Image (cartoon, rainbow, N blue to C red; front, side, top):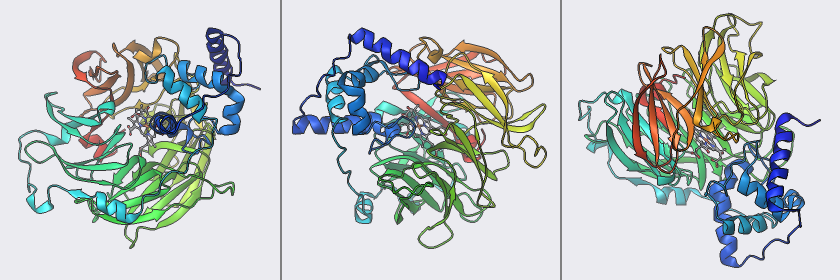
Length: 529
Ligand code: DHE
């Protein structure tokens, strides 16, 4: 039986084929050496994140040689041009890929993937650059601004972040931080931002200098999406972990200088016993209760625990969950880590204090919570939620095993949204709303909108246009929760600032190149979401 999203995918595919004309099974183009390497780089930049370097699939489906040959040159071309309702972006239509790129990629996908390079410790060491040693940094803030309310906004395609004063909305710095920077994390005190580029470059940014500045950089991976610092008492700001998409390793650094300390190979066996060609580190969180990081090992389906109190930063536990793990965050208590296994349509809950799987349950097609959202439901107590890339629902599940064990880790409300294609959900204790985007929607208009779910009334109160240039994506509240910032993700994009009670627009910061994630220092350091 086909799910609605598979039916929508097929319809989109056939519509695309109608535009193309009948399927002719065109032979793939012959690639010169230069064309092969162009296609390889394009695949790495645009496709590998979802489909894997070895194309075995994760957030997106398997597009290995066998399946790519089956889809064929024309079918691959149509999918790349027009996208699919299941979340494949319309790379051709939106101008991100040219017709030439599409032809080369369709041929590249019908050839075996090349072997990607390793990144040994000596290369990581050689990449380390400490531009401002600790002794040369200020011992107290050199400016009067409320740095705990700073916002770091990712300017994805510029490879930069812009830092804003959350009180005045003034830009205080714009910094180069690596190719297609993905996220920022804050150190335990909030003084430092850690930025992670898709190219694996980690940048350490000091918010106390007269103007925020990059004080050290290092590259521990060729491809990466996440980083986090040590947060347990006595270890604050001491260490940092970078999880790689490639090579299959994690690397730890001194938290104040980024001096490389250890490189650890990941186990390459899945929960089903398969030997894996790649095993990527997806989300990472730092435990507030013990000196550990929790890392999601995407392809393998294991959640790993790394102990930073031990020499060499070993992986001390591997908890079998579901495949393929992606994004997640803490419950309200900081004991349970909830992560999307988006190819299994499930959320997985790990009890970090017991180092055991607490639950796994189906929520819908391709859950994608970001770090999720924690709030108190009038009936079910503490809950958390995920929207979905592949269907138009927000699944709300019980997350209160102490006070409401009867509802814990079950979907208690399924809320309909206007469209599928959601990426993020977010809230703050001081807002009555839970906000959801529909960034990858392909219905023509929902991608501009955000929806507001009322915590008190347990209904969607309204969905409204926020983006005027591109796609509305990702939310972040300011320190006291009185404002929420949303990105209008476009080449010439903006960050839109809404009043967190009325949801009316109070400011719009324009002239930002492809703004995506935003990270408020206080809320990121203290895991407020
Ligand atoms: Fe992300 C979080 C990986 C596409 C913006 N993204 C994450 C995390 C992972 C990840 C593993 C969790 C980090 C953590 O919390 O430790 N993202 C990937 C991909 O593999 C994927 C699907 C494809 C790719 O090639 O990167 C992907 N992500 C995107 C986008 O297209 C977005 C919208 C824009 C971009 O930068 O490419 C995007 N991802 C984000 C953001 C977060 C994120 C803003 C952080 C959310 C938060 O609030 O913590």
